[in-house]
Amino acid sequence: MFDFVVAGVVAPIFLLVFVGFTVGTVGGFIGVGGGYMVTPALIVFGFPGYMASGIDMTHIAGKGLVSTIRHRQLGNIDWTMALSMVAGTMLGVELGVRLLVYFKKLGISGVVLLLTSVVVMFSLFLYTQIETRRAHRKAEQMTRDGQKIMREIQTSNLPSYFQRIPFFPIVRCRTARVVVSMWVIVGVGVITGFLAGFLGVGGGFIRVPALVYLVGASTHIAVGTDLVEIVFSGGYGALRHSMEGHVDMMAVLFMILGAMFGAQFGSIATSYVRGPAIRYILSYSLILATCGAVLRLAYVLTGQSVEILSLLAVMLTLGEMIFLCLFIISLVLFAIRHRKGKTVPPWVPSLVV
Image (cartoon, rainbow, N blue to C red):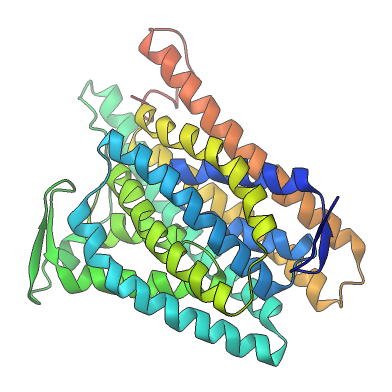
């Protein structure tokens, strides 16, 4: 146990390091900061809602930098798209932090954070799960027909609508192979930046689907490009939260210690899979995090008197992170076996490369 003086909380060091490692692995793989998992977890560990948001935002900035360096080496970053989002991201983060400060003054920051997390994450889960299943079925059919499967498979028609928006300037994102109005990219930055500042997350859990389903980027490019945004939004958010006194740097350091190793592995793992596999992991992470947030919300609304809810929330949070890490490791191992011509489950070949 460690006494985090600034936060006024006593919590196990191991849990923070473990959370940093697992979320680093998942974040490096699906291009998210993982705050939608970490912020609720920190609240259950005893950190106040506003402090949990600030700590996680600061940890996200450090972890995002490690993942960004690795994805740059893998060629998964479109710098035109990333830099076009920066201004919108900064504006959104500022608005989100200000709203959080308002709810903090009302004394309801924890409840509002959890409730918002539940609504947003469940909505995204439904859409990503439906679309990814369609893409997976399409890939399996292509396999049966003997057709060559590309690294990316999408079934959504939304990108074609947004790419036809005629507002100038029109930008050409060469790495992502997308031509779209810059205002579409900036709009994605504003919305996700707002969620980042308010929920204390990198915003990736909504920015990756937005870049894929609205802008039209491939999943791998969306993951790498989003991590660049996470560095900017996380860094700015960390600064703003620090100014408000929402950050305990000792907690941040313990989480970054684990995240440095996890982020490296998660980033490398993307080179073994196709786009739908990454979106599957994103979808499962969203529904598991939603269930955990519901339990935490119930615990808070009952005046933190029903201890079984707190226990279940902690168990689900830790179980969720372990499950997602094992899923990612399994995909990598299956990909290696498939490359060597060995037997793998029938659903695997259409998801790995």
